[in-house]
Length: 447
Image (cartoon, rainbow, N blue to C red; front, top):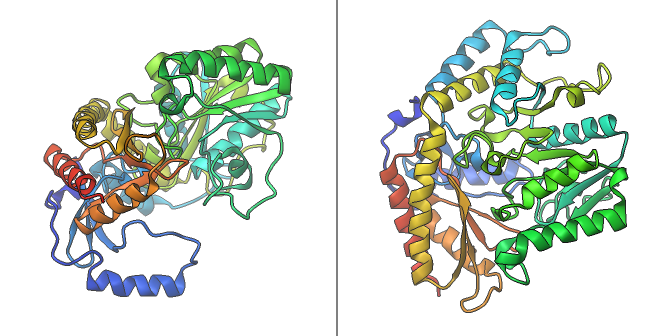
């Protein structure tokens, strides 16, 4: 399926993590790179593919992060590599708004075909998820001639000024970077595990509270867009209960509000569907995508109803690098790989393995308060046993243990107490099971 899996699909530690070569390179990194950038896995990568990352010391590490849900098709997937190499040899850049090329158009055609809904759609391409969100807001404001934008607690939408305002979590994303853009209004999120009156009441009560606040505090006639992740990513893989998203979409439609699904992290087969909002048949007016779209190259998109996308004046959308011909070539390869190898189904297979294993762990380890997610987007929320009090210290200990054992895992959550698992969708099952065994040992080692 991809060039990367020619790497042995095994966990192999030949040094401690980090090894001596990585340790030396970490010193160079510290001297040359801004201290504002964090470090997850303290190794330097030489190759990656399938379910592994290889470092400069010869260690082979199981990858449970996929570059934060980016390399869904695996690192260096054959079709991505072939397309990129051919495109680089042909031309590297013209700027689509200056001298157009077919790769951009073909990516838009695929997005218009693949995203939910059978209405006429159009797309525009950009570079990052945050840029896609910024442009979705711009488009919604022009179309509705309104200003207010509704977002949700625990949501994450990016690191630009506008998307920092839209993002809920202060540290590390917003601390010290204000003032932020105005006309952003944050609403309660339907968070089943932490809903005060119980999970069974969450959908109805959260929707009722949302409607009350919008009607009494904002006025629906002032709202341009409702923006929500169908499954919240950085917020801790919060899966809203059935009925909440359709309720929001219905409210938006009733009041002429543009409903925006932020599928930057959930898109492109990650959740066991091509897009997460398909789970309840929700058809957004606009959908933002990035991460898994292009097999590791920077590309993002806004796709939506043609009349909304066409409401912007000529020249109002764009950007020098948006829809780079090289990134478009990669995206065409990634989309072909997803469809040819049915990675939507594979995400469900991986998800079943993870969920069943994690539920077994939860039965044995009371530190696991919740297991949640969909497809190959699964998380555990760690708590102080016997309570629902967040336990970020346990997350830190587990990440440290897994790092030492050659398993890359990612943390998340508003309270810093969530471990999220995002394996490449091409990961061999034996590697996934081995990673889960090590994760359980890490949990068992907690003191």
